[in-house]
Image (cartoon, rainbow, N blue to C red; front, side, top):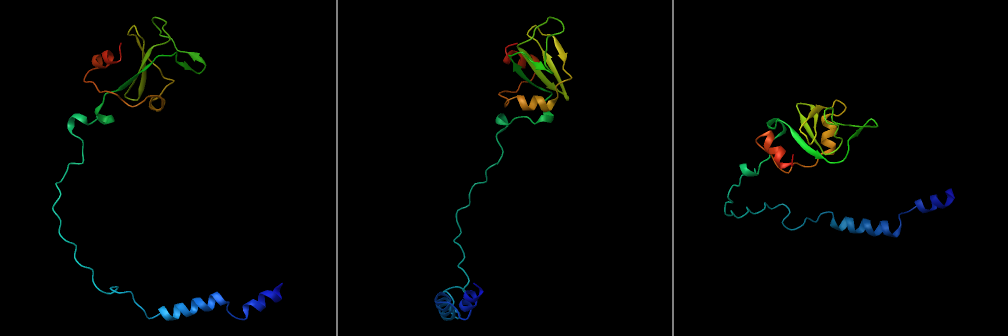
Length: 147
């Protein structure tokens, strides 16, 4: 086996010889226009500067400009294997879940609110979809969500 490898290594192969010949011919050749400076581009008409931001009526407030967020939760809410019920009226479905100041609050259809310490803003962000509207007051948001 080593004998065959040494035999091949004695001289270059036909492909290696052909490559060496082509390389030697091309050694002193330079493509046309390679060292010449390129022509200056033609000046074009100036493009109008466009503001990259959305108009004010289409901008969404940032999280620090919003007092809180809320989303509807129609089905029963089960936490730690226990169904959450309103402490005052016993309702267990059709919640509004409010996220404000790092706290989560539940609001039943009757308007009773209770803080839910087993939920956090990370849970809220995972389960809420994109905001479809912003409202100036809490009551406007309640009307929008049908409560």
